[in-house]
Image (cartoon, rainbow, N blue to C red):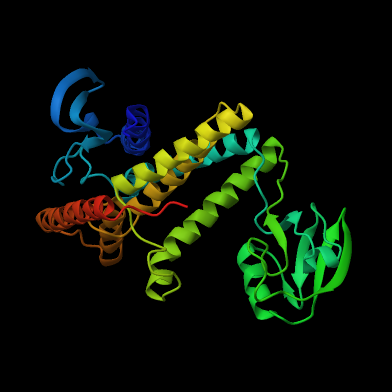
Length: 358
């Protein structure tokens, strides 16, 4: 069943992320003295000119996703008040401003979320429930304990405890855990064929919540941001190296992003019914992640993206020779066309083979 409310929310959210990106270009262009001819809400064709502000036409366009900024002299380096005639440092600031605004939006949302919902410490394994007659129960494990080591293997993530458990299947091994800050140990034998739903050791695990003050929430938000940057940048390398199972990692388009957003809306609805939580926590978290991801994507060194223009600027700085405007425009046009084809292909695939959402 089509949920038009969620569709409108998605259009607004995605448009907001792109609008914030273009707002960064606009504000910095004005700040460094490069004239902006048009600030558009949505993408052309133009529907109507709303007004003119300090020489910039503010327009409303037909395609309701995000917006764009058209600076003066984007292709003419002889225009003294235009983009191409500006010093390299000014052009660099303008180009990087869009992604920077995306990062700021993502981090501000994270700070807000960490002040209304306690984040979890994914480096710690919390025992939530212990199965009857399991190795976990026999060793004395209780709900609320923190598992720190299995054998000689430190446990700092769910992947770590999964790997360690497989390593010691049907072997007697020391399990180390803490309770109220006091360390305890005991011998367990992870089972190769445990009863259904129990797991090899026999406990349900999660991550403990962490209470943060405002200052701590800022630091945690920046750490979360940096972890997402590292993960996103490393994705192509990890994919090529085969570190993902088939179908585990894929590029998604608007349809795939909408599916994630729709799923987040369902989770928020369930939480609202169960706990009277009125804030769309899951959707806000997704918006933060998307804003940061869009910022990173725009900095990729691909012509037609901001990162591609920064690459041209770097080449100009190193060679002390500007790439001719006609050559740069041709390269940008070719890659823009290729990106459109890729965009269409990815979205068609998302319709034919929707992403699997747990």
